[in-house]
Each structure stands twice: as structure tokens, then as C-alpha cells.
Image 1 (cartoon, protein in one colour):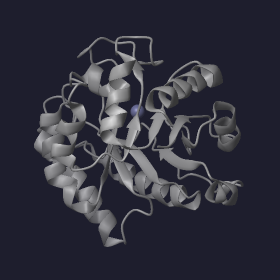
Image 2 (cartoon, rainbow, N blue to C red):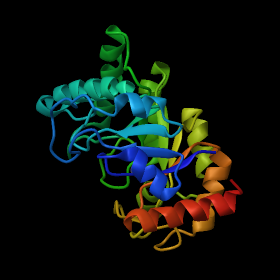
Image 3 (tube, rainbow, N blue to C red):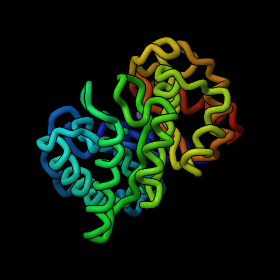
Length: 259
Ligand SMILES: [Zn+2]
């Protein structure tokens, strides 16, 4: 089982070594504001050849569900350009959040917008890196916070080979119990491609996307271990505390999982 961390993009392989990680996830652009396509990376060949598994997290500005054309259309382009740039570094997956519609909008339109994004990509040969949709923690109009909505999202996109990334903080803070979460997700998606193994500063169902270290916060870390064991998927910790905090979380998981 591969276990790694979300790290700074400057030198991901060095960051991996510091944490004894065998996987890394990073951003290719500024996730909060960049709408431009990623630039080619000088270390692309090194990353491709590395023993370390690479995952790319898409920018937060992307919202493929929204009814706002001025967000949705550039979001499709940005996801496509990230899938291409992620392929250039040999990434195994491109993680993108489930998105949301605006208050008062019909969620059904949001699910259909998701479907259209994959239809459009399929017309040009599909995304160059497998896309993993991640569950989110907050909001009343989210496509992938509550699993009743996740099921509707999967009805829309499930035929397009899309993957799923399960974030333990987001599930807990989003109001989905971690005890049987893997079975319930797999009943919907049929797959879990990546686990974001995070503690949560926010309470159950608080809607707060505030990651914590394993063993701190409101999630029993043994529950996170059980989720990983049940899912059997690669793991990325997106936890605070820099090298020390993340290395401790990785070491804890390796110890508990016997890997
Ligand atoms: Zn996450």
C-alpha cells in the first residue's frame, strides 16, 4: 500500500524523501486563483521515472457543476489542461472537488453539467490523466458532500470511467459516518482510487473543511486506519505540521497498517 503526502510543488521528490513517502500529491498552479494552464515542469522526466507515485490536485477555482457559464466553461478547459500537464509528469490521477451549484439552483442541472464536461472531453479523446472526483465537506448545494447526492452525480458521470477520491475529513465534517463509509461509497461508485487520510478540526457534520493531524481533532485515528484497510487504496495525507507533522502521520499509518 502506497502512503504519501500533499507537498509543496517546488521539489516534490525531495519532500517525499523527507517524509519517507512513496507517493506525493501537489498543485501545478496556484489553487486559489490561477485560471491559466500549467507551465511545463523542468523535472517532468524525473517525476515520470521516479519510484514515487505522483498525484495532482486540480485548482479549487474549478467548478464543473455551476450554472455560471463564466466559471463552468473555463473550468472544463482548466481541468483538461491539468489532465494534460499531469500526464506529462506521469501522474496516476488528477483529483478534483465535486463542486456545487448556487443557492436556489437545481442540483440536477449541476449533475448534468458534470456529465457534459466528460462528454465534451470524450469528444477530444478524453482526459489525458484519470480524473478522481473528491467528496467535499461543506455547503448545502454540493454535488459530492452527502452520499445521496454522490449517487445522483455517479448516475450522471459513472459511465465515463471517472474515479473517486475519499477524504476522511470531508466525509466526517460533511456528515457521513466513517464507520461504514467504504461500503457505502463502493455501493455508489464501485471504486475508491485514492484516500485522503486526514483528521478534522471541525465536528461531525460541521461542514468545516479544516484538516487536522491523525490523532488530533475529532476523528478517532483508528477509524481512518480502518477506512484505509477496507478501501485498499493508496493514501495521501493532507495534514498540517509540515515535514514533521506529515511524517508522523505517515509513520502512524504504516505502523497500524503493518506496511
Ligand atoms: Zn482532500
